[in-house]
Amino acid sequence: MTKSKRTLLLEEPADDFDTPAWAQKLKERRIQLQKSQEDLAAQSKNVLNQTVISRIERGVSQPLESLSLKELLCYLSVLELTLESFMKLTGLVFSLESLEQADTLEQVKRFQVKPKWQRFKVLGTVSAGSSSSSDKGDEEIIIPREHLIKKGADPKFVRVYLVNGDCMISEEARRSHKNIASGDYVAIDVKNRAKSGDIVVAWWAEEEKLVIKRFKVEREQVVLYPTSPTHPPLVLQHEDDAKILGRVIWRGG
Image 1 (cartoon, rainbow, N blue to C red):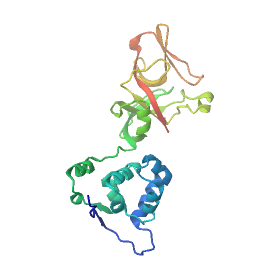
Image 2: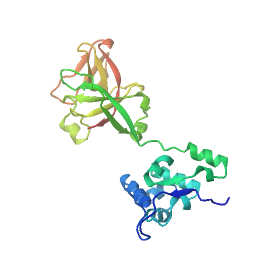
Image 3: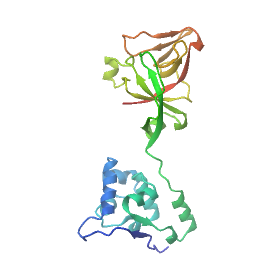
Image 4: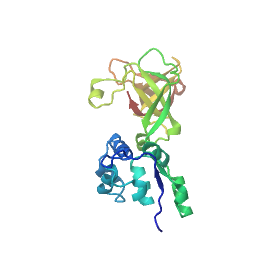
């Protein structure tokens, strides 16, 4: 198949010796992702190499002209860009009409890169030894999708809360980077059942508030333990005394 011209350059460089604006934008995108040219080449699984990426970033090779469709889609993937966001970033226009094969056209139309981050609304506060929990309002945070995937969590079943109180901090937890401090955010998985030993968010019926504690089953009792030795554990005599909403799978703050 003869490669036809597929692009229009919206912004011509002012000087032939200057790096084109689109090339600078692509280099900035790579740096923003904290990746080297070698990193991109490795992630492409040998579809691209460092020399090709270097030529693009220096403006020597225009990607929509010099790359095959397979190479182009791979390049967008390692930069975590969709075709639309690539065109918006660089000012380069991909002309679908120039493609000669229908299946190739469909491949381009279907091409999407999953976002690196997942956005969640903060549903409220959870008590970590404080007197109450409450609704939070319209605040939102973002969590790395990769972390959710590693924890086996479906974003549809993830809920986020703000921690209020200091019962989940201790010197030992600090040394192991496992402190959950007041002002931190926690994400819980409400689908997968919590196991004994997991840190959970639970509804404490007696006090009518959400609490965050380490959940343990001991004999015929459920005990919710704080991390801090200065706070007492919550011993539940009956199953209905507290409802486990989900296990904590992420903390940020």
